[in-house]
Structure formats: C-alpha cells, structure tokens
Image 1 (tube, rainbow, N blue to C red):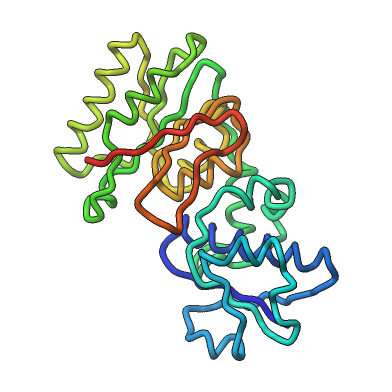
Image 2 (image 1 turned 180 degrees about the horizontal axis):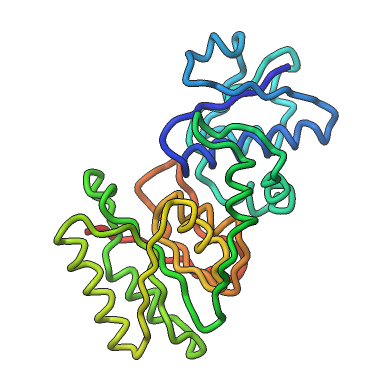
Length: 265
C-alpha cells in the first residue's frame, strides 16, 4: 500500500507535514505494515493514490494511537498542517534519525531531507551558555496580523536566569519603518535589564541552524522557529503558544521549556 501527504505552504509547513507522515509510517512499520511513500507533486490526490483513507489534523492522534482504524486495503493520505509537538517529542530519536545525508525524501519541490541535514551537519558555529538566541518573525506576518506583541518578548526576557547576559537576535533584514521601531523597543528593554544585544542575520538555513544549535532558545510563533526548537537540544527554551490556529498545538520543546501565551500587535 501507499502513503502520501498534502504539500502546502512553505518550508516550515512542509517539514511539519513530512514529519507527521513519517511518524505514522514508522508506527505502521513497527506492527508489520509497510507503506511506500509517494510524493504528492502538487497534483490532485486521485493522480497519486486511489480512493485513500484520509487523515486530517483533527484525526491524526486518534489514528496514531489506534492504527487499526486504517482499512488494510486502503492507501493513506495526510491532509493538513500537523503542527503539533507531541508526536515529535515522543519519537524524537526516530525523527532526528531522518536527517541523514542519504535521505533523499522530498519535503517539497525545492528541498530534500538530505539538503536540510547537510546544512545542519556542516554548520560550525556554536553558542555559549550565557547567550539566549531570540528569533523574530516580522514582515511576512503583517497581512495575517499575527506579529507577536513585544510584551511577549518582555515576558520571556524577564524570566532569564542571571547566568544569561547576552541576547542574540536572529531576524531578517528590516524592510519597514515599523520593524525598526519594533526591534528598537526590544533592544531598549534588554538594555534596561543590563543585557547585551547582538543582531545576527543570514540566509534561511543559516538562521535555522542558529536556532537549532542554540544553548538557550527564545522562539517566535513561526513554524520555522518551532521546528528548530523541537528538533534541537536546548538547555533552556521559551515557546509562544499560538491560540489562533486549531491545527497548531505547540506548547513546549522539551521538559525545560517555558510556555508563553501570545498576544498580537
């Protein structure tokens, strides 16, 4: 039988979709059911699978916990975003094993898992215990009006232990005046707490690796940041809990995560 998943959205969305299918495929294989993956190249589902059993965001964990609900003569199609933390945390060793230089699975038409793994494995910068890596997502959240209020960052910064004295802000280059004002507001708050501030801007995978390898991670409410938090290993982490989307249930990266309820500008 075959298994496939909906490929929609961008990098973070696609990686969450891929991991959801892989965890389900792994669970099926453990009980002796071998499903062959078929990449959905943006085609209509009927050209990929024949009359499949559909798994959605709402039914995913119910199916994962009881795979006997899947008819044995049906292909499987995952249709949703699957932006959850539980299945990744519960299967972290397996999930991390996927990021292998010889795993040529495609998460979308642009990136393979091998390409992502190569970026992670060749990234040579490491961060110190006295630094917290803070991710900000700004400009492409404007239209959706889900930019995190800077008060949320103030809340997270206020819980830093005394051993952390430097904030490294990972953010795209500013394109708008309001972004500059937003950054300045956060910088001034850090200074009021006697925290040093550094800005670190790179390309997408360079930034992803910075968050992945952070000793201490302060995430934004973006799939990009959430994934780095879930896949990496951090001494301390802070996770904004997004209450807008029903398909997004992420509250922690591990047992050392502080969860923060999100407000929006």
